[in-house]
Length: 373
Ligand SMILES: Cc1cc2nc3c(=O)[nH]c(=O)nc-3n(C[C@H](O)[C@H](O)[C@H](O)COP(=O)(O)OP(=O)(O)OC[C@H]3O[C@@H](n4cnc5c(N)ncnc54)[C@H](O)[C@@H]3O)c2cc1C
Image 1 (cartoon, rainbow, N blue to C red):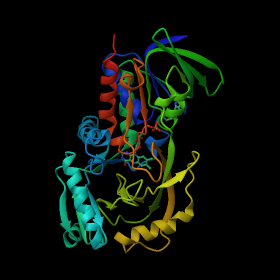
Image 2: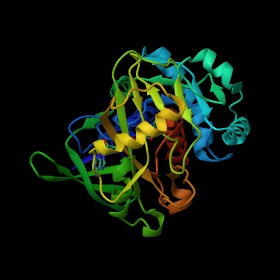
Image 3: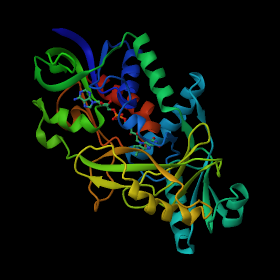
Image 4: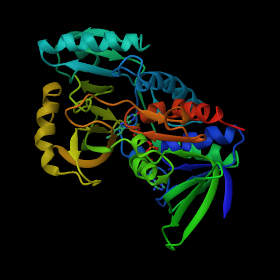
């Protein structure tokens, strides 16, 4: 049986950022990943936006970690030559009655430390983006985009340089706590054989799988494991010359940010994600949703050609609240909640998890450090 300082479940952007942080602090860390490669789930099924931190409730972890994480991420991308662009974004009101919502968004963002937003008239916004139709807009100059795969590769490289080890095709099946150590049962997905790893610390960063792992951890009070709800976000792409140079967002809708336009680093345009509540994990995009997308996009881009949208991909938000409930916060759960030293569970790491990844990793390391021997 292998014995290590720390096991991190999940090689998405969060698990990799945590492993890098712990390796930097001299911890002997193994990242255990069920898939045959890093970042094949939510971390590669998102908009790759570096969010400014505009929409989140004041005092929430999302607000704090997004603002901190954004600054860290830009600096990290610069240092490690990871593709990124501070392209900026416009949140647009397409109806006069939405202007008050825009003003509310700007005021809330300011209270969360986002102090660079600029209110624009419709004419000012159109001068920046001639294809746009709107009556007013908010410009967020510090919003950007990043190559999420480049980021994850850099994080893995640093984790490995610090002595970390990645175990692919390995599922964490269950665990128990014995003599102050986590005895984790893992299954090799190729041979089907089970192995046990002993770890003094355990970080559960398994994204959509985190709630299931926690519920199979003998010794963890089941009431500490929130119910997982799944909200798929579908994307459609448009080929041809980019019509915009900034990201364009409508005012937010319940459960998501509305059908917005994001750009990839080559200027390619994709629209989404929308919000589709689902029961089981399924990454199929229904092409019939294009009609709804067309209707939403046309409100701010009247020039979109008919039948120009193609299904692209989708991601699934690990939600902790349902359709009719207010959006939940990140849950980064340490001994202060569940009473178990050296265990951190991460639940509900939806957007802005990519932006917040480096700040989340520091917080996880702090929570573990409180119980370092
Ligand atoms: C549609 C959508 C758009 C988004 N857009 C943005 C954005 O523009 N900007 C932003 O900041 N954030 C965005 N996010 C949020 C961001 O993508 C996530 O917060 C982030 O990727 C979560 O990373 P993770 O490592 O927690 O999860 P994941 O990337 O899902 O990684 C978890 C890993 O755990 C593994 N795993 C699961 N179960 C087990 C097990 N039993 N044993 C071993 N391994 C296991 C999985 O295979 C997976 O690789 C978006 C999310 C969605 C869904």
